[in-house]
Amino acid sequence: MTERLFHRLAAWSLLAFATFLTLYPVAWMLSASLKSSGEIFTTSTFHLGSRGFGNYLSAFGERPFFIYLLNSVAAASVSVIITVVLGVLAGYSFAKFRYRLAPLFWLVVLISVMIPLEAIVIPLFLEVHAFGWTNTYAGLILPTAFNVVGIFIFRQAIISIPDAYIEAARIDGASELKILRLVVLPMVLPSAVVVAVLTFNLAWNSYLWPLIVTSDDLMRTLPLGMAAFQAGFDTKYGEVMAVSVFGALPTAVFFLMLQRYFVEGAVASGVK
Amino acid sequence: MRIGFNARLGVAGWGIAFAVPALVYIMLFQLYPILFSFYISLHDYDLLSDPVFVGFKHFANLASDRAFLASARITIFYVAYTIGPVLLLSFAIAWALTRVQLSRPYWQTLLFIPSVLPIVSVALVWKLMFNFPGPINATLRGLGFDPLPWLTYGAYAPWALVIMSWWHATSYYMIIFLAGFLSIPKDYYEAAAIDGASGLQVLRFVTLPAMRPTIALVLVLSTVNGLKTFAFQQIVTDGGPASATQIMTLLIYKTSFSYLDMGRASTYSVVLFIGIFAISLLQIWLMRDRHD
Image 1: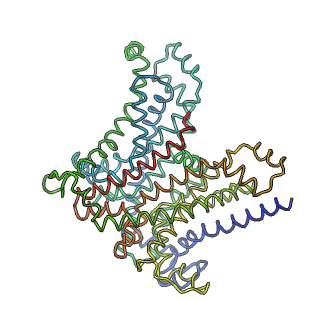
Image 2: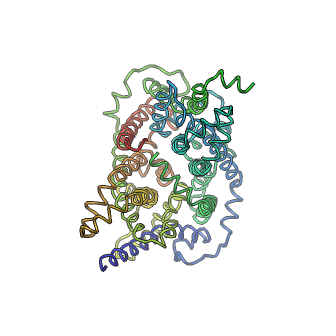
Image 3: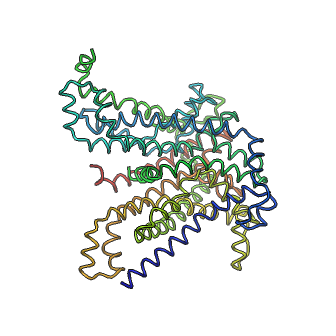
């Protein structure tokens, strides 16, 4: 009994301490975004500063942050659509169809998971250049749009659909596309949300590829715009923090609404 | 009409047709580039003139390439000092989360925040936190230590990046560990309780063995993710001061897109790829029981 009490006390202290350390930089960012550069390093975190939302307004005045935001939304949305569509199709194929090429196809998928973007940016850039896609939305979005983890998540979900459902539909003369639409899709909707949230967040965070493929300011996504703002105005600390908060807001709202799916996606992308 | 098409293609044909779009995507934007990467690594290429075949020259040069060796050392430093503390912290926090019942969702939400924040926001905040007059040095001073020039001195900058990675990565692996803890069957603990096992014995003989696959998974994932890190170093220090934080991804980026030495940069990429590929193979081997 005392041991259990001790455990609970230890757990609470650890959680409280970890939460404090986790939240401190976030609180500091929020408070700094409301301060003038002079106040940031001289006043406490809980001092709310004199700038109000002035930093936000002047940062938006200096760079087209709403364009960056739109570019990011477009890139993340296309990425989600491509990943869900290709992921459902391939996941269905690997879960329920037996054909001679299947092991080879599966091997290709497994290998692709082990090819990091960081190691192929040079050939990818040359390829996109050859397509004439540099500084275009196609070049920005398409090469990194498909998140292979989607195949794993959908395959896992579709495996658990009883074969009898699919066979029954087939015997009734339903076409394969109809089976996909009416039998498979409704049963994998929760997985689709997980894949969508996971992919959206990945695309939203994408930094290296947009950095390489865009040079036009109006093509920049939000992470690039934020980093470029910092590089250009690195002593305007308050405005840099305002920009950081602005970039974090959409995901924060998204997270609060769809928390369960964020967590499931995090686990699924690790375990695969 | 549709039935006729259906019959002509056959069920297996449909299976192939469903897999093809994803496979085309993978081949176009992953397999072809990695093969192309090997090809460029055997050439001198500066984007302006045609590639010149040089065989394994770039690979032979690696052993005496000081930028590469320094970067390899920094990359290993970063990965090595990140994974240990992150593993321990995320394991301990996940364990603590299993000890609380009603309040768990609230703690979990708050502790997961670093994984939800955009990487660039995280980098920008920590860059200022490590500023010479900044909150971290203010804390150090409050505790009676001297403030440190975290980002401007080569001995401290790698540590600054390691410390911010602890903060950032712990929240993610905590979730993986929590999932692992929650999947341990309750009977194990009941059996241990009936046998009169102490808390430490339960940890040693029940929890740790059951968690071994998850621990292995987190080790592999954190190593691979550490090797792939780019944005933190690029934004916070841009590899500096004097390339003290120039990890491999950043060296590849600069060698290719600043110095236009595509052959050499591709050789670095191939080395990075082989490292990550080998570790990922290890993951598949560790996870082999889970696939069906």
